[in-house]
Image 1 (spheres, rainbow, N blue to C red):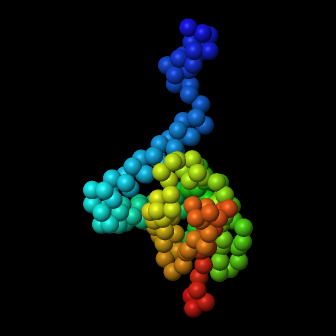
Image 2: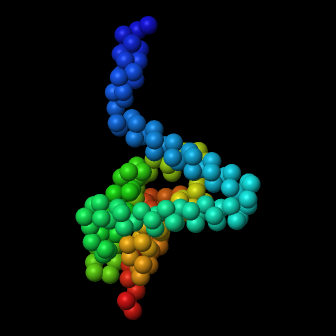
Image 3: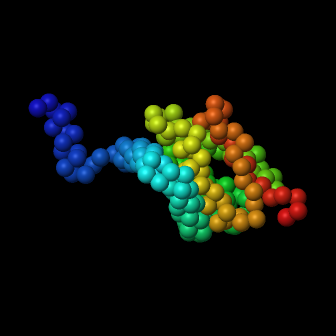
Length: 170
């Protein structure tokens, strides 16, 4: 046994696996589980199965929205909503940033994620399904806002662009 192998085994036994490695493998695993779940729901239950998974993702986001907002000490406004999204993006390995902000609109660009482009079976449909989590987060924080993706990396754009806004009538 090489010294390197010996040392790595000791690190595992002593639970000194670097957190960055744990995080990367966990996030990647979540993506793999999600792709598999989506495929299984489609095969076993058809369109209704996918709709149920989408609704579940939305409800998880909705349920976590207030907790995340309070944990981060943010206000229930556009800025707070955007930073909740940025925080969740960081947790799930998505590199994103606010590129425009005014009183009625915030635009977020996501330029890289741990799933899209990294997992073979990750596609537009998978992105659309998992976006329901974000929809739940946004609607839980700002129920009167509108949110749309105007660009998607999974559709060939160089970034995903999420716009959260209030209509003129609000």
